[in-house]
Length: 117
Ligand code: 5GP
Ligand code: ZN
View 1 (cartoon, rainbow, N blue to C red):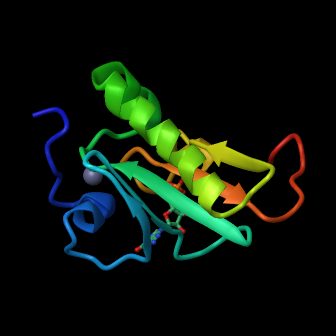
View 2 (view 1 turned 180 degrees about the vertical axis):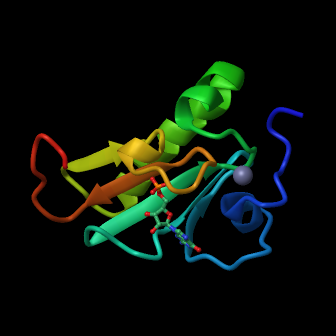
């Protein structure tokens, strides 16, 4: 069923507490934890606890949770005292998505280039 935990999904396992993570925030619908391979001084992933393969699919199926995700990304940035930051949703392997469970990257604490690589 849409949104159900997937046996082979790393972030479903982290959301369920089956794999440890450095959690920075948790709500009823979301979990925020530090990326294992940080690309900036602050690099936090915000995931919905429900499984959807990418951010747009999440927004289409459960818009309220997509809003929770964005709000939590902002909360993380605030707690990390980031004046400027980037929220990234890699979507599709060609864009660098490697984990097919929706997640926002919250990146900050260093200068950022545009366009991104
Ligand atoms: P994507 O490449 O799909 O946009 O982002 C997946 C992110 O998950 C990557 O930045 C990667 O470093 C991170 N990641 C992969 N495995 C783990 C893990 O076991 N724990 C944590 N905290 N992050 C992970
Ligand atoms: Zn999942």
